[in-house]
Length: 276
Image (cartoon, rainbow, N blue to C red; front, side, top):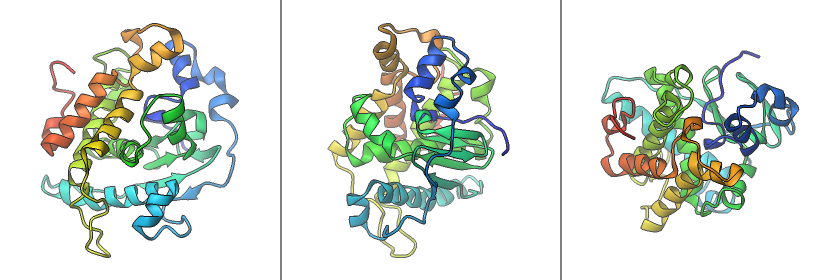
C-alpha cells in the first residue's frame, strides 16, 4: 500500500489515538491498537444493498452515509465550477473493525478520516454511536451527515492544494492543523446550506428535505462534541491549547455556522483569519 497521512481521524481523533497525541506519546507505539488488522470486508460506497430511497436513508445508517456522499458529489462539482475548479470525484468506503487504505492500515479507533493518497473517505458506522455515547453529541441525522461532509471538506482542500498545511504546522491553537480542520467544518456548513436544494441528477429531487433549526442544532452539537478542549477535559481533566489539532468546541461550531450562513467558500479562509 502507498503511504500518506490520515486527515481528520475521528473528526477529533479516535479517543485512544488523540489521548496519545495529547500526552506526547508516539502513536506508532500503539501499533495494533490503532492500526491493526483489516477486520470485516470493507463496503465501497454505492454498493450498500437496498440503499435506493430516502426511507432507506432514514432507517439505515449505511444508507444515510451513502445518501450524504451522493449529495456531496452532486453539490461540489457545480459549486467549484464557478471558480473554474474541476472536482475529481473521491471514493468513499464503509468498513467495520478495520480496513487497508492508501495511507496504511486503520481500525475503528481512528474514526472517520480522509486519505489523500487514494482520495478516499473512510467511515465506520460504529463511530456515530460513539459520537453520542463518548463525546456527548446529539444523535440527529445532520450530526451524522456533518461528519461525512467534514471528511469531504478535506477532499476539497486536497483539490485546492491546502491540505498539506496541516502537516507543516501540526499542533497549537493557531496551527495549520487547527486551521485545516476548521476550514473542513466551514466546508461542511457550506454544503449544508445548499443540500436541500441540490437535486439528485436521476430524480431531479433534492437529497435532503429543508433543514429545521433542530437539524442545525444537531450539527452544531456534533461539532462541539469533538472540540479539542472538550476531549482534553474528558481525557485528562485539563485543557492544553498547545496540544490542539482540531480547534475548540466553540471554534468548530463557529466555522460550521459561518459556512452555513454565508454559503460562500471565500468566507472559509481560515488560513488568512487573524483569529479563529
